Amino acid sequence: MTIQTRRERERAERRQLIVTAARELAEAEGWDAVTTRRLAAEIEYSQPVLYSHFKGKDAIMAAVAVDGCADLATELRRARAGADGVRASLAAIARTYTAFARRRPALYDAMFTHLVDLPFATAEAPAPLRDAFGELLAAVAPVTTEEDAGLLTETFWAALHGLATLMRSGRLPEWAHERRLELLVDRFAGPTRN
Image 1 (cartoon, one colour):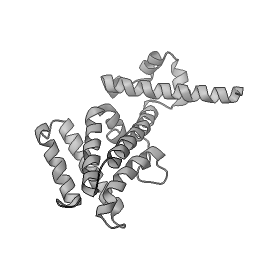
Image 2: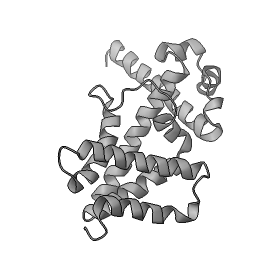
Image 3: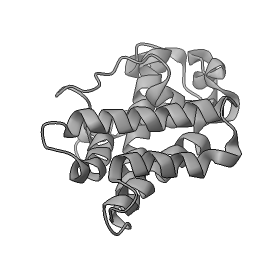
């Protein structure tokens, strides 16, 4: 291994260490607790080392969001692959998406609630963002025309996001969550479609 290759690998490992520490700290204490000073102490590097990787907290949060989208895409892909039929696929995607949002609130907030400098819905969007949306699209596409597939997928995603956000904030009661998901899936797939 060349010295340059080793340095690049070490730099990538340090970058991932920063992202992982930010993610864990946010999950444990919320995003307000994530500061460059606190992260530097957590990973035992100086603040200039953090700034050699990221411009600041917003850039770190964007990197966390990209990693989170990769995780979400993996979970959605697994859910969709394990479903039999269109309706079952939509239902599995809906349950998996909302469960992810509830299980990982700080990560979900970085991905879809906080303002981060990431391009969404463009060709320039990082691959994990496109992959997560692609899993939603793969579940929705069978119930729509090709021309409407993207817009209908955005609508399905928005509904899932709204349900997850309103339930997390206590504005919707937990006891009706599964029924809400059934109603949503019925509107997309139809109550009798497989």
